[in-house]
Image (spheres, rainbow, N blue to C red):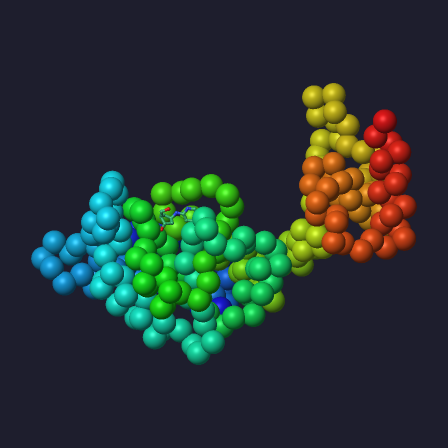
Length: 245
Ligand code: 4H3
């Protein structure tokens, strides 16, 4: 999987992708992350990358020509079938379902804006889709691009070790994660649930599924709406509800 991020802050991207799961995937050659900056395509001595908005008002817009050249250069570095995605709060939500769609692509250009954003004509001609990581405004698209890269890379085959991939099952399965515990067995008077100590693997599996269902029902009930539940899941959720009062 190949990513090219278009950004005024390439060092932010390079630094962030060095660590953790994504950093390891890059070291192993499973993923590449390049950054391209419009500044390298600016034609004046000051290397100007912003310009004033038509219609007036405060703030600047990313200058069209250097950004357009940066996008085309990025596209040329990627295989056919790659997509150009703009990170913006007005976009389609980044969900696990969307991540599972994106992971099938050979590569992505991720356009990270700054200032007031990108000229609409570049969005309509060069960008295939706008994606939002949530309903809030950020000062740049770099953090959303890094969020998208992390979410996609961890789904790629062979990126997570066996220990880590079991852990992934929770949101992938449409539910919130279950509670986790480590040593000591008692901490500040709080005990680890007995079932996790016993070593009965089926009891543990059922407890975790029940907690995942129960927490989803408590905290994010809308996630259960479109989801078909097995007989076991219905039984466990009913048990959880009965224990609530
Ligand atoms: C994405 C980008 C929020 C999100 C963003 C999100 C800066 C877009 C600039 C950048 C424009 C002006 N904010 N929720 N901000 O995913 O290029 O907003």
